Every structure is written in C-alpha cells, then in structure tokens.
Image 1 (tube, rainbow, N blue to C red):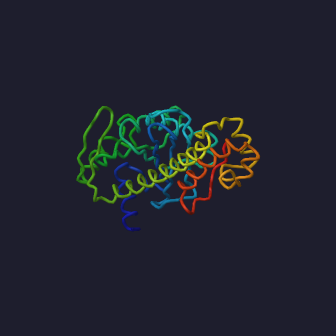
Image 2 (tube, rainbow, N blue to C red):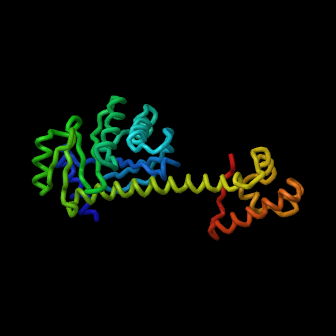
Length: 268
C-alpha cells in the first residue's frame, strides 16, 4: 500500500507538472436525499494517507438539490479568510464529479482570489477532469504525460477528460480519496437524517402541537426522556385521553430503535 501510495503521488506530480509530490490533498463531495439534509465533506490526505483529525463537514445553507451550487458553496466557505488561517491551503483540491462540479469549484476559488490546483474525478468512467482555462500546468504537457500513461485524452468544452487505466497507481490514489470523501459525506448526511426523523416522531402525534411539545420537553428534558416517562407522569401532565394516545406512539417509536440506540436528540 505504501509503495502504491508513493507511486500514485509521483504519477500525479508528473501529470500535473508539480515540482514535488503534493503533500496535502483535500477531497470534496456532496450528499443528500432528494434535496434534503444536504451536506458536504472535506477529507484530507497528507502524503497519500488520510489525516482524519483534519476532516471537516458542512451543512449546506442553500436548499434543494443542486450539486453545482452546493459545491460552489462549500469551496467558498472553505476559502473564507478564517478557514484559510486555521487550516492553511492544500496543494491540490480533488472534486468528486465532472465538468459541472469542477467548474463550480473553480468559480468559487477564483472569486476568492486564491490559486490552488483543482481537478475532478468523474464517477461514471473514473475520468480525471482538468480545466483548460485553469490547468495545473501546461495543457500540451499534460496531454503528453497522459498519453505516456496509456491514457485516452478527450477535449469537451473547456475541459480535458483523461481516461487513465484504472490499474494505475494514480487512479487508485484518487479513488481512495474520492471514496473517503463520499463515505464521510454520506455518514454525516445519515446523522442529520436520523436526527430529523427522531425529532419528527413527536410532532406526528395527533393533538401534540407546539405548546404541548414544549411542555413535554420542559418536563422530561428530551425525546429520550419522553420515551422513558412513566404512564402516571404522562397522565398527570397531559390528561388521560391525550396520554393514552401518546403512549401508543411511544411504543411504536421504541420498537423502531435499535437495541443499542440510546442517543436521542433534543427537540429544538
């Protein structure tokens, strides 16, 4: 693995015409489900190895399902003056996606007057995507180096699409970074989704409006506290009829939880 990592960095250096192998590479991905709970991930590989302490996650502020807008947003936030001071800058940005995602990231980078090389890795064919307008190096040299790697190079709009054999150390390195950014984004998306679902079960109970919900949270502290409340406590707070209805939903919610699932988010 170490040899493959080093060879991958060396091939990446040759392709992009870096003077030395890139030490810090940041990978970015977007995750959502039908436009809800949209998040972005930033993973960091240092000398070809994951640096998990440096990973960051972003909850998207732009609503809906628009990968280009969300990629623009996350790179804009990454390149804020505050984050540049705290985290520094990478030697290379790896964007999960093709021309659209890379173009959005490049626009955000240029709007913040920061120059750092950016490339994309398109999922369908594992193509390395490089902007001709913003290449990491001389376009003709990039094309020549790609061909030395037995790659097929295609120009599409203002981008080079480079099909490097999947067996190459370079592609394997980029795949590891891309897959890790995808895993991290999906895991954060799942956390938000589960948290939202847990918060929503109480709202779904007929007759439990905002006033009653606040009364329950004030009395029991959290949705977990409500699930653990005694029948007599619910009756005293809500009255027998509403307490009986709530207990039906409490039983259903308890059944839906895994046996080891004890962390329930507070309703806000």
